[in-house]
Image 1 (cartoon, protein in one colour):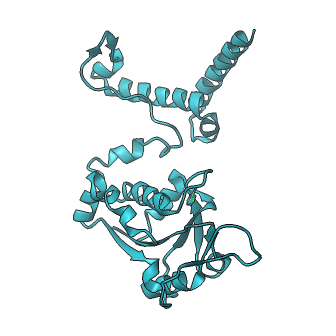
Image 2 (cartoon, helix red, strand yellow; image 1 turned 180 degrees about the vertical axis):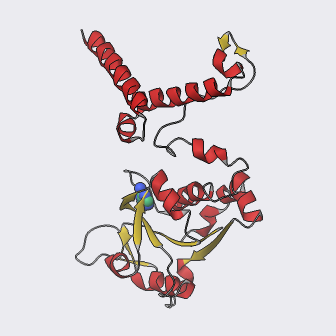
Image 3 (cartoon, rainbow, N blue to C red; image 1 turned 90 degrees about the vertical axis):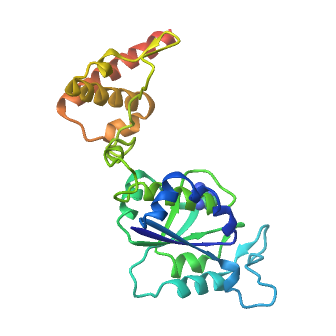
Length: 253
Ligand code: ADE
C-alpha cells in the first residue's frame, strides 16, 4: 500500500494517466491512493499568487515559498517520517533502485515545480529529497511525478497480477530483459526461436538469461559492467565483448 500526496498548480494534468489499467486497479484494490493538492489553494492573498520575479533580476518567475510550505504543513506533521520530494532536473536520478526504495514507503509527498524554479528555501528547509527523471528539462514536475507514481506502484506487492513479472523486469536484476514472443510461431516467415517452443524450462531459462546478458552488453555496457553475474557469465561477456570489438575494427577498416 502506498499513498502519494501530490502538490501541483495543475491537478487536472493527472486526470487520465492515473485512471487506466494497472494504476486504476491498484487504486480500486486499495494498494495505491493519490491525493492531489492544488498549491494555489494555500495562498492567502486576494489574487492567489503562487510565483514572483526573481531577486537579483533576470527572466522567468520563481514559485513562492509560502503556499508550498503551507500545503506541506497542512498535509504532514514534521514528526512523521514521510519523504517530501521535490521534482526537479537538479535532483538525484530516478532509477529502478530509487523506485524500489520508495516502494517501501507507505506515504510519499511529491512537489511539482513549475516556472523557472522554486524558491531555494523550499529546497533547504522543507524537502527531504530531490529527484530528476532524466537529464532534460520538462515544463514542470507533473509528468515526472506521474512517472514516479507509475514505477513505484508496479513494485508494490499485489499491484501487478503476476508477481514474477517484477523480478524479470528490465533493470530489476541489473540487466535489460531479452526478447519476448507470442503466437503465431511463424509470422511473415520469421520464426520464434526453437528453444522457446521446446517445453524445456531449464533451457528456456538459460536462453533468456543469455539473451538478457547479450542485449545489455550491446545496448547498455555500463549496466552489464555493474551487474551481479556468475564467473561463467563474466567469461561469456568478455568473449562477446571481444567479438563486438573485432566487428567494430573490421567495420572501421
Ligand atoms: N522538472 C523539470 N524537469 C524535470 C526532470 N527532468 N525531472 C523531474 N522534474 C523535472
